[in-house]
Image 1 (cartoon, rainbow, N blue to C red):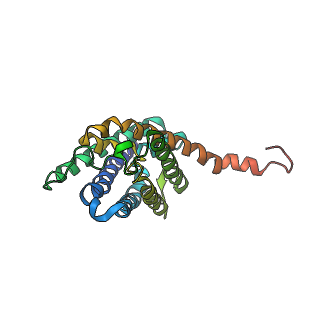
Image 2 (image 1 turned 45 degrees about the vertical axis):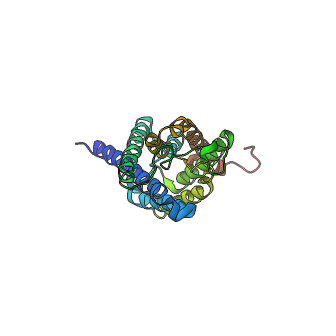
Image 3 (image 1 turned 180 degrees about the horizontal axis):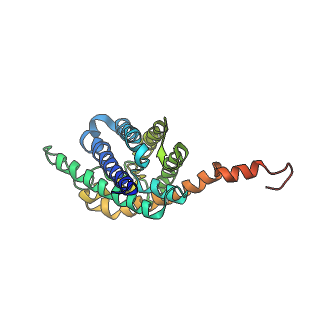
Length: 247
């Protein structure tokens, strides 16, 4: 097996396992422990889980575990399209596998309801604050912009180095604190899809918003990052311009 093939296998496995762990443990905190730990506890579960994944898989694949993050890296030209597609497939498969394991565990708890909810995201009567469709779209878009922007700022090329995992994990925790009462804080199409499949009903019919809004947010984050953090060559060219030269 060639070195490049081994690397591709490692990164794909990292994205699959990372997304599985995120869904099983973080969404699991919502499904199994939500009434005991509340919004703060759920937000910390998401943040701490991503923080751990950033240190475990960050040096391997960047620990995207989120198609919107991968799209941001693709738009920032840090990934090529074939690699991004492999990441997306691994993330979706990992999310479904994680949700399936969580569903199996939840079925062992007497009286625990899994239909229509199961840690899925929603708006309208499926939102704790009854947020409407437009508000939900805006919330998911803006929260995803922040998450993907921090990812892009804290990584070199693709991988996470040093203490980069800390701001990424903390960002997801803060995003979850804001987003859970609004939409359940999707900001991740794979994380939203896995639980929705097992919840069924409105969780599936509303899934389109939690696919489109985060992907648009990921693309916007890449544009914003390019404005605030121009490539090294562009920055050097700008700094070498004579004083008074129009920019």
